[in-house]
Image (tube, rainbow, N blue to C red; front, side, top):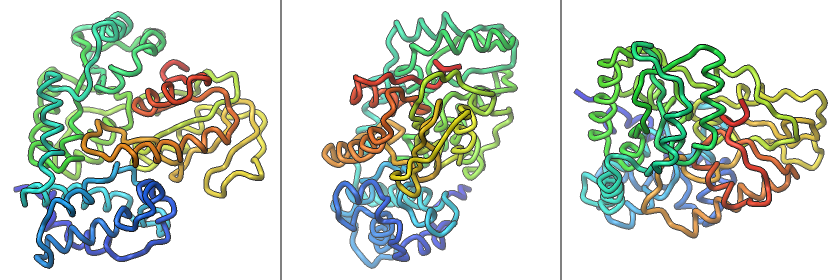
Length: 374
């Protein structure tokens, strides 16, 4: 019997629709549209009305419920010190509700079509990129270690593979052979396909366990969250240790003032702001007096900003389908403006989707994936 259901989360849903709109000014979708129906509590109010039989489901409501990048930015928990999990969970479950009512199907089908076209992956990893990973990562049959090379990191950050491989070699860490991209499965949940997501994640964990894996090294915060916090709430037992690489790094090799972009899964899902800040400790720093209260900028020799739960999201940190392109562009521009304010010519990024976006949007700056700074 599945416990992750809207029935079991009804109290959390009721709490989320209470209009504590103090966080609205931080919500990326509201900042893009200036429409209150893009604020989480208002979306969930509509979904709750459908759940309670007070409104008929419709494509209009489904579009609003699905129109969000699950960034956790601008939700009531940030202002009131509440559980940051709740709004995400009830949003996922309300999306499932709309799908079961027959609405929002095109978005879910978009994910399924992508997986079918890419052989079970949300992103295609080129032959050249795959070769880079396979040549760089040290392997040893029977090591008991597995490298969780998520789709996005595999496809978008392969230039960092040699540095990562050398880092592992210097520490005598090897991995089971067959280094391949892994679809983590978060998109199933993001698009309301909860049963499919649970079945997929269970099978993935069992497959790794059957290989004799004792330790799984993750490179992205999304896959880390999925295998730890999220798996636990789904009652999926993970019978191996999950090690997120930034937790093992003592310091990054940063020799020029750099803006750090942590991403939503790091800063808000895992709460890793301080962990990432500690990877580049400044010898000399001074807060910029004109920087925003919750987004401190620094005059410093290494890291010129402070990562915390308020850093604006650039994009969804999963494969995005069926999302309004104009809204996505405005969300990007909002976050890019903060990066430009820092004045840094180098950006260190801890999230693969944001890494690809920043390289495209800021070609005049040096954009480095954190793995390249080991």
